[in-house]
Length: 279
Image 1 (cartoon, rainbow, N blue to C red):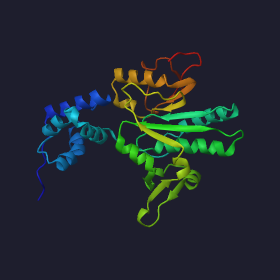
Image 2: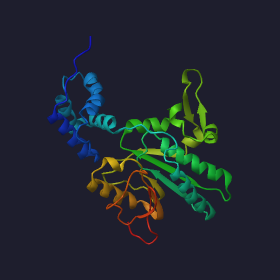
Image 3: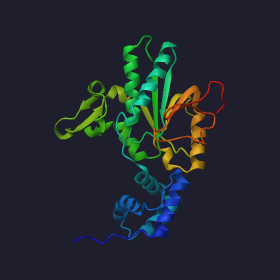
Image 4: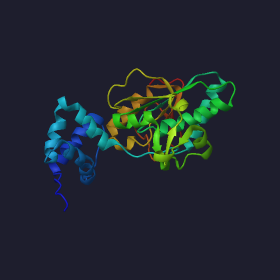
């Protein structure tokens, strides 16, 4: 016998949408009631609540920040994978080789890193350049996300093998360990690479901490969830963390039309901070 599930009313759905926008800048569009209810139902079950209205009251109470963070995690986390939109890794490699030739340290920020696949893909690109060029490349990668839950997964570097279906086989063999026995069907990013990548929780709509400046910032496939004003705010803040001449990488389907500020387009999903531009 199926248990009756509480319905998510239009009023409560709107309240959840407004709260999520207030704390994360992410806009959930109309018609997403089933998605929101499906993701939050487990919390009603865990907390013994009878309805979504009770849950909204709970997360509105700012003394319940732990539960609010759980709700943010559940509503903002999206699946990702290694080697997504590889054109950007080619462009990044050009940047990194130029830095190596000039004896400059190369620093990258994966600003919406989710569970870490993007950051580790970048790390493999830079590790390959450091391994094969002289003078060698000195590099570091910083990853951030609003969700503590996905950052914990990123630090572990342990993934289902299907997340690496697009990863070049030579990189898979060189930088990942295949799971055996109980861990069959999974991979673990090798320790040496994991130790080169640090992760920290950052909410992009809040004042950014003292990080950077960076040669490259990856902010891919996240701006689509922001309204125009929030998008402009985030782009402006992130651009201020770029070195002169640095690159901002956004999703190939994303555009910075009307929100690019000082940034100049350098190809699909690639924007540059001019050498002489102030952030």
